[in-house]
Image 1: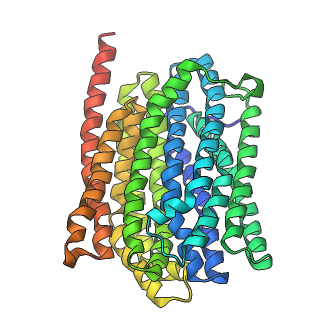
Image 2 (image 1 turned 45 degrees about the vertical axis):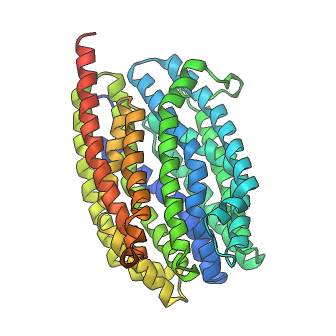
Image 3 (image 1 turned 90 degrees about the horizontal axis):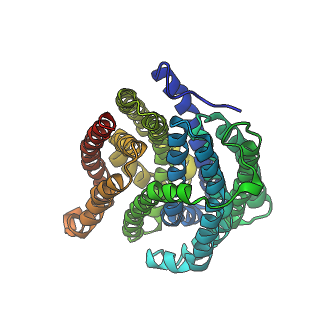
Length: 451
């Protein structure tokens, strides 16, 4: 059993050692999709790359609403640990797993049943539609496993254990890559093969992480016979997690709208866009790891009412994500042509479009990290609705408003114009989130002084 004391001792070194496994875990998760794109790009052509890449924004839309509930699980477990309440911790764990299963079944049913309809609503080209629909249907069959893994991993991280999810996902990742090669190169299954490989590997990851929970000897130990919906813990998971899920889903809606606009420029640009987005995913995973660190450290310390430590965690998280985000963004931009050629080796035009997206989005990407840290810090303090409202208005509102106004002007009706909306929305949202954090911080500290 691995755990970490977030309530006392030096912060910076503890936070860095906590964050690194999260980054590596996220990178492995992205390698699932990267392996899909690279293998279909090498053996099936740019049309298959476009088909797989076209699904990402839509799958995120359907998945993120329920994945947000795992954020609620993280906060509920961490608050209970900080408050020294093992019974509440145990009840949260045994509520989270049934919630994960139900969420996975609901998302899976929706995805399998309506995937083709959703893709048509996105104006997916007829050349890409059949392959995209097939990929999505198989992908969503594995959704219960995906949810169980994410909820279980969030419990482990709330205790300070970030290494176990990394090790378990690494084992599943090896299986994913091997199956990708077999299904595509040997069995000629095209996008169906990479979707099936991802589903099987996620099932392996889910089983392994559940076993890890069952082997713990603390309040987070999972006993299958005790799984049920404990009302206070379920309500807390929903109170914090549902707004987070709605926020993520609405983020995805704005990305679906942007993807639909990208689709209008043709499948060559779609291919370059998909490859670039996959590279940016590695940047996002890196900066988002600091969001999870801030969320968990602040949740435990807020639960223990150690507010001076909370403010130090926020400052260290912001400084860390700025340095790391700016560095990795610069590296991705400089290495852009080489990285893109891994995904699309046979289409110079698609590669050029991918480089245009990298140019517009990579340089300001550290601002996205600052925004995520401020959002996680607010949730760690127990605020749920405020970060959702700010993020929805600041990110989704600006992007959708941009498409409805600026993008409609002929001279700005370009992919570059769409990409610029990202940096603007990140900046505005970050500034407002920080103001909200200080207001919530002041309110919480005053409440505890007089209680």
